[in-house]
Amino acid sequence: MEEKEEVLQNYQNYVIGSYVRSGLVFVKGQGSYLWDIDGKRYLDFFPGWGVSGLGHCHPAVVEAIKRQAEQLIHIANNHYHPWQGLLAKKLSDASFGGKVFFCNSGAEANESAIKLVRLYGKDKGKYKIVSMEHSFHGRTLATVTMTGQSKYSRPFEPLPAGFSSVPFNNFDALMSAVDEKTAGIIIEVVQGEGGINVADRSYLERVRALCNEQEMLLIFDEVQTGFGRTGRLFGYQNFNVVPDIMTLAKTLGGGFPVGAMIARKDIADLMVPGTHASTFGGGPLACASCLAVMETIEKENLLENVKVIGEYLYQKLDQLKEKHPIVKRIKGLGLMRGLEMDGEGNWLVDICAESGLLINCTQGNIIRIMPAINITKSEIDEGMEILDSCLEREK
Ligand SMILES: *Cc1c(COP(=O)(O)O)cnc(C)c1O
Image (tube, rainbow, N blue to C red):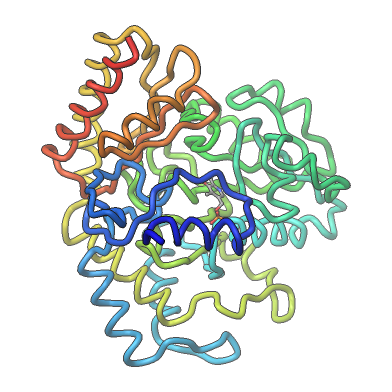
């Protein structure tokens, strides 16, 4: 049997089929390139949904994981180890001076935020959380309920109580959903899965003021926008509106699974021993990997790269829009970009992959491009040429 066929058959026979998969089998990655099992090379403009934010197998991340694995792989949270506190300090200093809870994924980070909001609301009789339509917060029962796309949650009814969602960037709709039992509001400052929808600054400012007035917590889900993607370390720093709680995952570990919830210190202290835990959360390997990612972002001046290359990518996409009427609009911030297509966009993802470029399509008609934050101009050029010729083929 062919090597590739054997891989596919093992999945078919033994892996639960909960994913839509491309049919590509990858065996090696380096920087913005991936190689499949037949040796074909691909330029990756959507590395692991943003997880491999420094590109595949960044040497600093590889080195950190190797070094740490030889010293100490896991210490559970009934003890201390040097790297968790150090990483927490760096995350806190780089954001809003909060305290950090470590877990292993975006959903878990949001689940932690939900639990913290419930602790905060307890003696005020508040427990409800309002989210945005077209948001995405994860796949656990609570986070999928909080996700403002009922197609993901409906099959699992009955759902946990206390969640509702309102149209994004619509303050009046939010006002009418908030009542005296509302304890928190959760927002992605740029909706990823929802189609690269950027929050209005004035909207975020009004939501912040509303939260202050009515003793509600403002949660920013920065699982996708965090760690450099938008040209600032955290997406909210583009808007000058500071949350009470922020959640991170994806790029944070540079490919290693890590999630984190950062909360304002006075709120964070509500999580006393016994309220929340994670066996793997904040282990030495995960922390070493995150520390390497943070150091690399600084050392290689990657936030500046995202600003410069992000603008360059925008210009290039805008040129494609002028040339191909099927592209209606370019959206996004930094290296988080969406092309709104006139109609279905999955055909473009498929023929780009055939031509050696990996991109994504979300919401049916939004082509999503989120390359590694250290991507170069010439790699952007290479990808844009493929995209251009694939758009041409449709006509
Ligand atoms: C991917 C994502 C999540 C879920 O993260 P997992 O690690 O898959 O659990 C949550 N929120 C946002 C904004 C995301 O993009």
